[in-house]
Image (cartoon, rainbow, N blue to C red; front, side, top):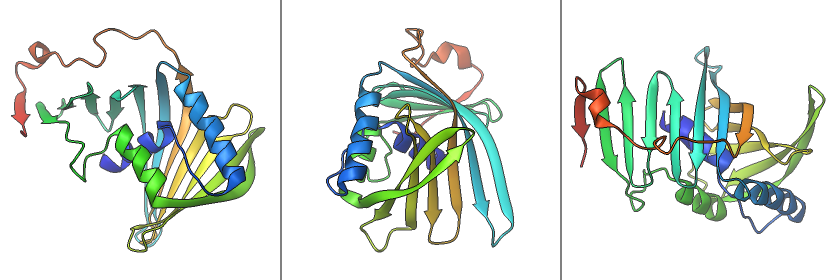
Length: 212
């Protein structure tokens, strides 16, 4: 779950780099485009492949993001972040886990932290161009500066026509590849005022697990 959220935030956060000029220009276009939207709604496919262990897992999900707030549905679990508190709702376990936002926690995944992670942690350059069902997808290769990183590199696929992210492919040094592909990318949707609000009254029979 944490891996999926990380990839999603990589897809939707504003990105600013200071290296390869051509890649910088393209990524700035993506960043400016994202900043221009009030909200973003994404339906996506997530695939994890481990060839050595003969593992191929595929799932689908959706997320709505507005600023730092988001609502994610994946693997039967709903996660709501209202800007301060994260609520993880599991109908199967009849449990709600509540945790406070702590941007100082190195394991905390927030849009702002992912932004600083990109700025400080990667070198980048233009990579291959692919034709995907008539769409020109330009890839940017991100390589961790930290030689101890578990990530070998990341390929960020950008639709050259819309300047929207098409997919993100993370290659681990352990040979595991995770791919998040955008099936639907909608913007400025009319959102319910309570979309990012947790209503505890709806979960009276659930176990409420407050971590802090």
